[in-house]
Amino acid sequence: MPEFLRIFIDLFIVLASIMGIVVAVQSQKFLERPILRIRLMLLFFVAFAMCLTGIVPFVLVELSLEPTMIWRITSALALVVNTGVLLFVWRLRREDKADPDIGSRFNYVVSLVVILFSIWLSLNALGTFGTPSAVPLGFWFLAMFIIEAAGFTRAAMIRPRPSFD
Image (cartoon, rainbow, N blue to C red; front, side):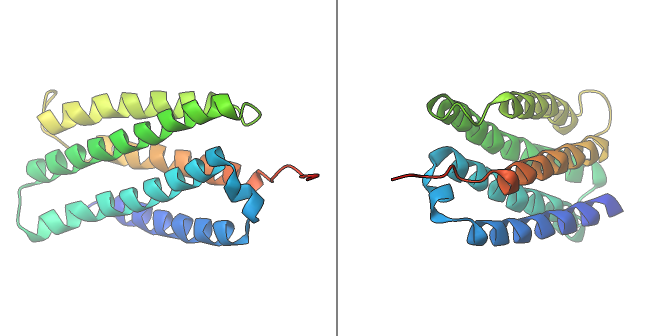
C-alpha cells in the first residue's frame, strides 16, 4: 500500500485537530458571520472526508480485492467527496455576495481544481485510459491538502471586525 496515503491521513488528522483549537479560541462574533461558519464546516468536512478516503484502500486490501478494484472504488469515493466540496464551495459563493469583503477568488480556484480532479478520478474509476492506479489519487490528496492548508490559513488569519454596538 502506498506510503503517501498514510502520510496524508496523518496530516489531515493534525489539521482537523488544529482547526478544532482555532474554532474554540475564536470569539463568538467570528462564528456569527455565516460565511465564516460555512468555511469552517468546509475545512472540517475536507479533513474528515480525506481521512476516511485514505483509510478505504487499507480496508479493501484486507478484504483481498485486486489492486485495480481498490483504486476504482477509492476513486469513486473521492468523487463523492469532491461533490460535497463543490456543494460547500457553491454555498460559499452565495454567501460571498452577502458578505463581499471576504472575496471569492479562492472559491473559484477550488471549484476549478475539484472539477478537474473529478474528471481525472472518474476516468481512473472507469479505467478509460488503462489500468486504474494510485497516481490520480496521490495528486488528488496533494491538491486537497493544499486547499485545506490554504483554507485553514484563511480561517486562522481572519479576525472579526470590531463592533461598536
